[in-house]
Image 1 (spheres, protein in one colour):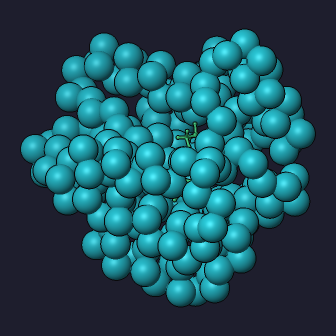
Image 2: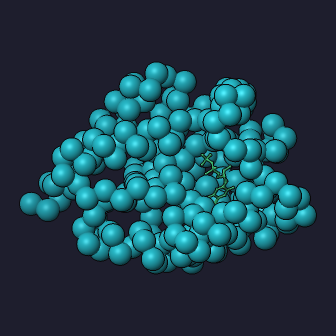
Length: 217
Ligand code: TYD
């Protein structure tokens, strides 16, 4: 079984930049890296993604939203993630199950216990070995996102149109999950320069790989 790492954070936290950098670093030490994302990562998932992101879908209920993210995930786990891990490869995923707990559980305030239960069923119990959470104050994330839109980088999606309190609940949710399970989570201060964030992630990963090697002996 290979190594599975997920990246989490609010929009504007720099996840996409860091995940690409980590993929490069791991490939340099001969990992067979598969980089994927949620929602999407499969042809079916990409179709679900376009429904989820369409700003015209204003009537979408929180439950529909949760089930669509879950449907995309069910497909991704079985079609892409698990087969690659079974081949001994390394999977880096830009968002995974914890996004649903943070956004639909804490953010949309769906019943948390139920969201966790369904999510467990959807992933078949598959959990990342490491989840990197890039933590950023909500206002800073929104400002970065705003600047990106102004520079015409990135498209505005349905999840970009929520009130500030929504993102605050999402952030609190992430911090709560990270605190409850520190052996899986790495919280990194995403206000730091890119190379420092990268350094923090790499150090933690080195430790994880050493533990893995020691366990094999
Ligand atoms: P995306 O354009 O991929 O943004 P980001 O770069 O922030 O990942 O959009 C994904 C959006 O979907 C993001 O706002 C978070 C949201 N989301 C959920 O609400 N629940 C989920 O389970 C997932 C995977 C994503």
